[in-house]
Amino acid sequence: MRTRVKICGITTKSDAVFASDLGVDALGFVFYEDSPRFIDPELVGQISSCLHPFILRVGLFVNAKDSFVKDSINRSKINLLQFHGDESEEYCNQFNLPYIKSISMKDNINLIEYSNKYNSASALLLDTFSRELKGGTGEVFDWEKIPKNFSVPLIVAGGLNPDNVDTLIKLANPFCVDVSGGVEIKKGIKDREKMKKFMVGVHNATL
Image 1 (cartoon, helix red, strand yellow):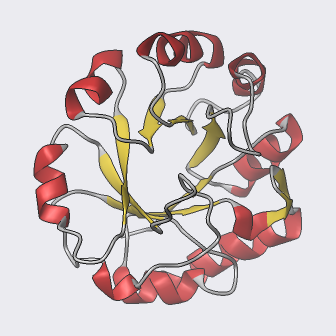
Image 2 (cartoon, rainbow, N blue to C red; image 1 turned 90 degrees about the vertical axis):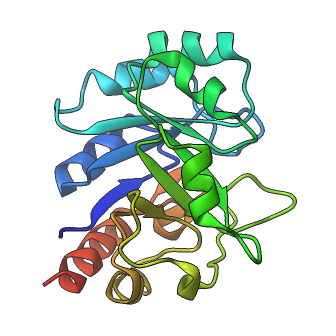
């Protein structure tokens, strides 16, 4: 099975178009104002108009008011939601779009319990646990915790970069890998050579 690729923390049209042309499957836009990668939904709407129709446009939210999520959906033209906070399944399900639920990989995490708790989720995103940050830590977690042949598609984030993504894929064979800081010049601005090398790493790992 081919491992999909999501590049998150996109803040510019040029980075979005370049990543799209590289063949990524999804682009992530952060609608969390405390993040250095925050982007206005209106700008995402403009970027979305420049993208081909077969790329997913993912909006990332953290404990947002439902009115803000609804407004962001309308303005940004996103077609997949990603929730990184303490949102309930009922909350995640109210927006008439498929969603991903992020899970912080704490010690003794029970992913089966989470998959039952969010059984309507299109996928679970496994990210490094941090008490201070809601994603974007730049740190990897213990990949041995990733279950094989899990019943729900798993997306792996946290500290991925062009030098380690092939190792992760060969070890865990996730449905998708999610990278942000590992392909950046600075927060929110992507490095095109790193994006290219990341895609090569994913491709080589699945040959």
